[in-house]
Length: 204
Image 1 (cartoon, rainbow, N blue to C red):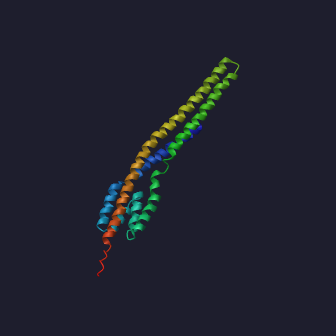
Image 2: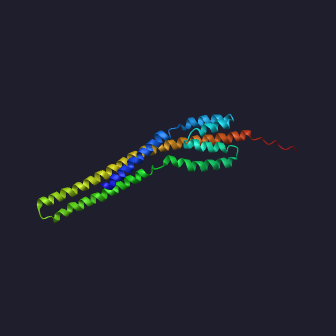
Image 3: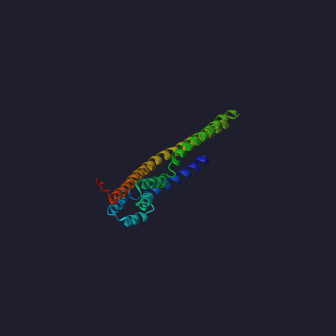
């Protein structure tokens, strides 16, 4: 019970951190941000686009800022910057989420250990000589077993429910971020193609 109580405190702390991050810290609209930046890129106003990206600490803004700083490079260099930045920044959205199903499994196993301990206490009552004492030890052992089972399963169910909610929100944010960053990257590359001088055909 004490071990599972510690697990439950850790789970609540992680859930609060995840809710704060996904519903408050990362609440920037990636599509609206991409609309603003792409519009400025299409106008050729990279300085204003960079200023918009620099105003936010959101991962999508950090990646967009690095892409804009490499906007005068080749497409291969821009792609390399994109992959490096995304690999570094996007995992921030998923931080600690994987702890929830692991904590649920741990709580279930710890509860099972407590259940077995309670059953051992209950069956140990057979050694008691007095009938009243035997019943008291049996009741105590069964109570320990049921409390541990209930507490472990309750934590596991809570972990499962919160994981589904958090993971759903997290997946939507990541999808929106990837779409927004792809738009920014494609806009930069398209603008670079427009700016590049076309080669004149060779005269015979």
